[in-house]
Length: 131
Length: 131
DNA sequence: ATAGTCGGTAACAAAAACATACCTGATTAT
DNA sequence: ATAATCAGGTATGTTTTTGTTACCGACTAT
Image (cartoon, rainbow over all chains, first blue to last red):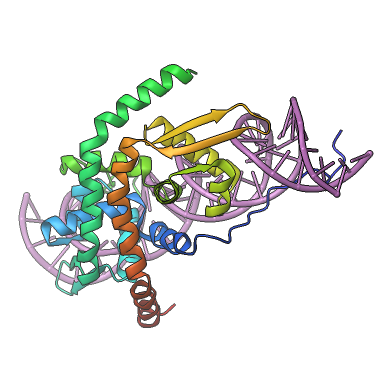
């Protein structure tokens, strides 16, 4: 008995939490998994070439290319092109990139500390809720 | 003159960076944008109902439902159901959820501090690289 | 009677992420 | 000659994530 548009619809009514939106923006920008892993690698090794990153992370050429371009565009990574033969391109963190390393490694440490707890919580949840 | 499989293929050769993989796991679990925003909201307000969160974040019902379920499963959020009429469901952080709040707000603060810089970097990049 | 609240779910559409394979051009190593 | 290296670009698909819309039951307020 669907009489059309009589029932309530779910509009999005975001108005509050002004900061949340902006945090949201940044998180969607640098919050994907490859970006963070690239930043972690660069912060550990200082400077890395394209294929060094590729080998370290097990990322595909295409995703690495896209990820580095995004990070460079956002001012987190600096790219240096040496027109030698074969070509040599080096990537390193900018100042802003380095400053981002701190909150990121905070998350990383927490992750390492709590992985086991999370796994256990999952098991318990899956048992009680059961599927 | 393509003779088939003679040319090099792009294999993925991930072997190094043992920690990266595990950090990756947590980041893919709680690293999506809604999870972090839910955690931030709960840490600020203590306890929130479903629709309160929905209004605060401007998130769709479905995404909030999925996000909360994931967070509950991972042991970061606790759900209390009051079978009143209308029903009342309250969400709050667990102990582990609270411990996660610190690294999360570190990211949040960084995001707020650096949004403008990122925007400027983008502009500059778009101009020099041009489209 | 009709619309609204509450906390969701199911079905579907759109978008983003990711994978796979192949291409370049100059050069070196085999 | 042939293959390999370097740093990607491009084309095409698949898979995952995200968002939209409608719907539920049980009640209240108009």
